[in-house]
Image 1 (spheres, helix red, strand yellow):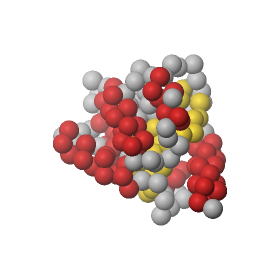
Image 2: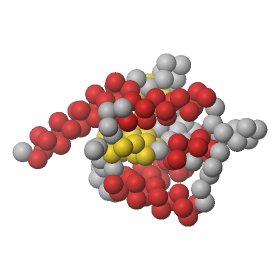
Image 3: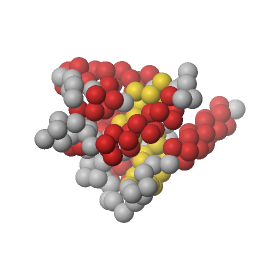
Image 4: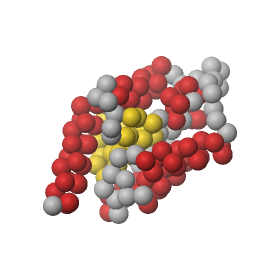
Length: 157
């Protein structure tokens, strides 16, 4: 079974009033999770694990779990955040240090940190630019993963 770690801004997306992410933000993550789980992938996403903000873990708990799950994943997929998500950027560093193939989901028209823009110089990275109104096309994510798979197989030969 293939494993994905899906990362992105979290605390900044949780409403102070409702203590939960908006339906639109939940759908942004759920669409990817559901698509890949239907294909028998294991998808780890802190947002879902912590009930979209209803059940935040302690910093000690979530840090250890996220680090361990990144270590076990085959692919690291992330919304880096614009503005930058500090937690997601830490996870990007972990994934890069662990040599995990990455897909960065970048919203069209947004500026990203220079170190995010240059990550492909030191890591295996594919970028997917998406339109916020239309959301992420999960088929494009799947196609990028297939490209990464082909690249890995070619390098192994």
